[in-house]
Length: 313
Length: 282
Image 1: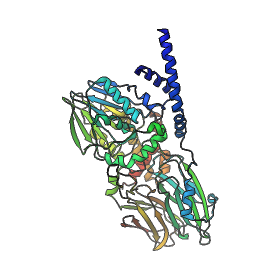
Image 2: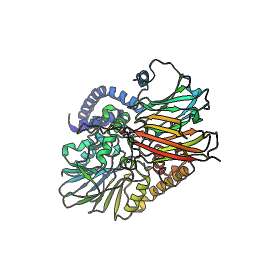
Image 3: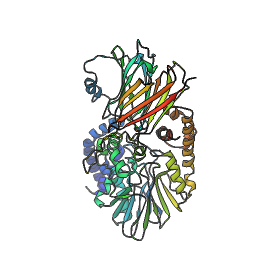
Image 4: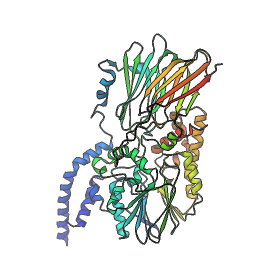
């Protein structure tokens, strides 16, 4: 059977049983948009990982130099990563020389294995290897629960072969990317990528747009990181979730308001000797109508904020 | 053209049917998995029970002595608040002697054993635990007459990116042994007063294995907490890796006179940490 035939079958099966045909569905490239010359982004769906979206819920993409390509985040499953690899092949025949992981969360890195054949350098924060190690088993079980054991198989977290302690530049041939590893903020593994040529700043989950931010590191650290980011001269920013924006640093406004409300209310709850459970029920509830997936992440954010702030004097 | 299309369609349908037949068993499995694993495929409790309680009989009526409060969903797999609230006062004649906190599906199911005296006043305990997956959380109450009573709550696992491991292990390690011991209420003579103990400790589970070296990170966790008032034991706890990073306990004690609340913590590497709090009633 020819490729078109296979693609048709994949489509048919995909409609009948979404998520059950990873190998075949993987043959369709992920939709990407060229947001700046040589900079391509797939905007993830504002959803939780399901068998229907196969983990394609985060922003992923790539930057094309004269010599080779850097991938920035590979998506939430092997299939997600394979479809991104296909999108790259559609745009360029240059090899993939770098896979950059912006942080440890599974919706950003579970597509790593799709790039093994390219034998790229895997680049990440200096804490990424340890974070992957500590979370690997739990993330694997969680993905199997969400996608089904078969569909989840082959999705792997690949530890960085190049660790970034603070700053590092990589050259794609006539195109230099500046990487910066942040102190604990959204997670303890946040890495940003600045493409000097286009002024595009890839923020990973240091920025959420429309989807409620998820706090898995340090609330105070995240607010501090946003303060420093404000000074980065970016012409375009790519959030980890949501639409790219040229409105910088205003693009951080909503997130900053949310995180400051969280800080204020959780501090007050602790001062009032409310327990963790009581704080979860009350804090920053007025932010609810402003965000997608609020109930899925906000209680956890309050928990993270509380367990951080209760140690303040 | 038309017949060619028909030919293609027929052939595609045949291939599709064949593939579907091969894949449908997985479809069924995937659908089940999405709803969460079946609860009683492996009954972990049956496996753990003999090691903890041998053949002793356990009544299912612990709700008469305590209320077990857990969230329906573990919002954060690393920090799930669990509260045990006593329905009876600790009196010398009748009191809760021991509370076993068990998380059936965790790698180390026995999270903690709390040993209580009548001097606690109330056998209320609140702590935070790690929850690996969909599981029953259960409490076995041992009364001072040695009888055992049980209750349990089902807790759903957390969402995709939450993990039982700590958020910032480097920060937790940096402050190891620091404690905060506070009273949550103004203390009154001969009345149970609520206190909180916070222990800065990574409580490393030691479960993560390096895929390259095949070595486990050694576990490093708080294994024992002793709380006394004026030198007399109030509560002690034997704890394990299911307790969250930076272990946290809320408990009661009864000040019979002004004095000092003291805490001694021992970890799995035999490091010990001490804290004390003067208590002055009005």
